[in-house]
Amino acid sequence: MQGTRVLVTGGAGFIGSHLVEQLGARNEVAVLDDLSAGSLRNLETVPRDVHVKKASILNRKALSTAMEGRDIVYHLAAKTSVPDSVAHPEAYWRTNVQGTLAVLKAVVDAKVRRVVFASSAAVYGNSETNPKVETMRPAPASPYATSKMVGEFACEEIASLKGLETVVVRIFNAYGPRQDPTSPYASVISKFCAAMAADEGIEIYGDGGQTRDFLYVGDLTAALELAGERPVAGQLINLGSGSATSVNEVARLLSEIAGVPIRTKHGEPRPGDVRDSRADITRASAKLGFTPRTSLRDGLGRTLAWYRTQRR
Ligand SMILES: NC(=O)c1ccc[n+]([C@@H]2O[C@H](COP(=O)([O-])OP(=O)(O)OC[C@H]3O[C@@H](n4cnc5c(N)ncnc54)[C@H](O)[C@@H]3O)[C@@H](O)[C@H]2O)c1
Image 1 (cartoon, rainbow, N blue to C red):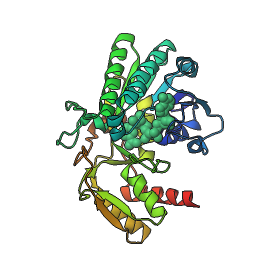
Image 2 (image 1 turned 30 degrees about the vertical axis):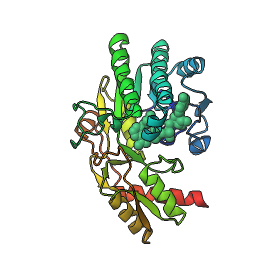
Image 3 (image 1 turned 90 degrees about the vertical axis):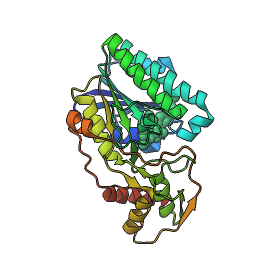
Image 4 (image 1 turned 135 degrees about the horizontal axis):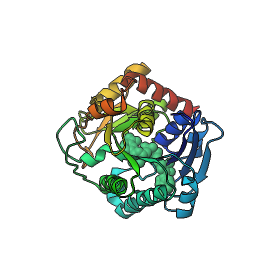
């Protein structure tokens, strides 16, 4: 992608900041983020002329100003925790449903050509079928998953009513530098890396045999760029690595990379956690030409190295 005017909502967050970094040098990129979870520190390494507006997607005026003259909007701003959504469903409805509807309306009003919506593997719910294929019936099992599902339907609706190009990506477990390890709901790799960088032990929920599809953030942003430029309007596309890795295996690899044994403690399994999750990425490969390039070992090595720099 080159010379495109892009807006990234949630651009100061983990994935958003990497996307801004990836697109920033060759395109005119702006960010809209209320910094409720993201941080300007995440954008320290992006080109200086990226314009950052601190505002909520629920602020219609800020939203319509941010949309002016944009070709593509990546809509990543969201509240992102499954357990937190169970505790505070209204907040998820407000930001992820009303917020997404507001973004789509502003996109139409500003005559933006395409919106890429960050949905989640969570919409597959507790289904035991693997790999997850886009044609499976979604079965959201949390307010977070439901909010993403509504966002997907809203994209479908607006595409058919208003002729807007929408691309929905269902992201599996992204990991990499800048992922926040501090929240009680932080992802497993960020928590493990932060604990190892601090020379602390790690806690594994349950027996650690549960598997996830981990995708390095650099591979994810490459796929997001393709979703912005390829002829995939109206498509729904899984973005994962296509491989399943257990939590125990992540801990073992990290220990090998660090060259030290890790102290592990096994806690209670987390209620509602799915046992196994793996993406079928046939469609991403066929429609986007996407191939994940970073091995889990390399991705974990880079991620651990980054968490170590944060300790200095
Ligand atoms: N990280 C993953 O593995 C993963 C998996 C599936 C889907 N996703 C989706 O990808 C997107 C990005 O996730 P992330 O991991 O980078 O999370 P993140 O929390 O780091 O980023 C979300 C960003 O949205 C911003 N935000 C929240 N509410 C806002 C509002 N009302 N107005 C403006 N900005 C707001 C936050 O400040 C933050 O910077 C989210 O939509 C998330 O649901 C992520």
